[in-house]
Figure 1 (cartoon, each protein chain N blue to C red):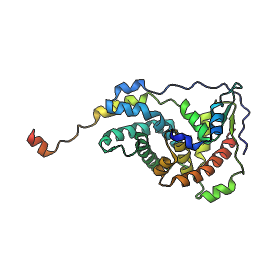
Figure 2 (cartoon, rainbow over the protein chains, first blue to last red):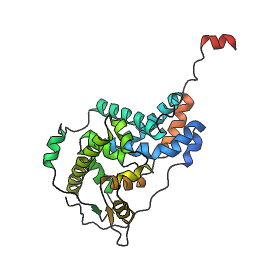
Figure 3 (tube, rainbow over the protein chains, first blue to last red):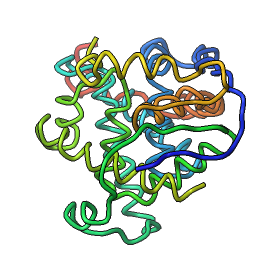
Figure 4 (tube, rainbow over the protein chains, first blue to last red):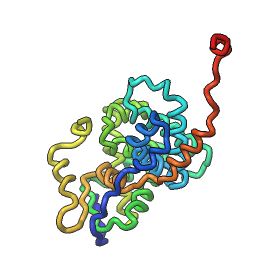
Length: 191
Length: 71
């Protein structure tokens, strides 16, 4: 799989996390929001594919978290707990809106369409990169999209990603292999 | 660090070198690219403001009848 684009770009600066606004929030939520809002917003953004919906979802997730803060017993990490709320919420949003396109139903179909091999992704221009990533993610089955988003979070292990998606860590590894290839194939087409 | 079991040492080094002199970005895999994308994504400040407004409108937790009786 060849992952090259012919665009030119300088490396963009990484913006600082949104922390200044947390002073508006109650202390119990401010800490959670400061530590996890970027991860939750990013999951919602790339899972839903719409900044406004992602904003609504992030708002709703943290409001739900505050309402149910007494139910969080520390058996999982706060990040995992928030992800669980976010995944359920985003899936409900998708189901309610019925605005996703039809996707192939099985892993087998996907595997047959994927090119052999794997290669690094080389990006020469970050302009429109977000749009290209979104386009590639939108073309993936929901499960692949979700797995890639979860395992790209360095705070989450395969076991935790598996727990959030109802499967074992080994199953995550297997599907991740196919998800990477599928994403790569779709990403090339966005050039 | 939990993430360590996801990559080989070589892969980690490649990822770390992605912003090399050429200005070209190299990503070992999709997760690496998504991680970069996430780091570039700014959380809209409006969310915190909306949250604080929503919290202000939340009804106070209901007190049970026996607590009211005892208070």
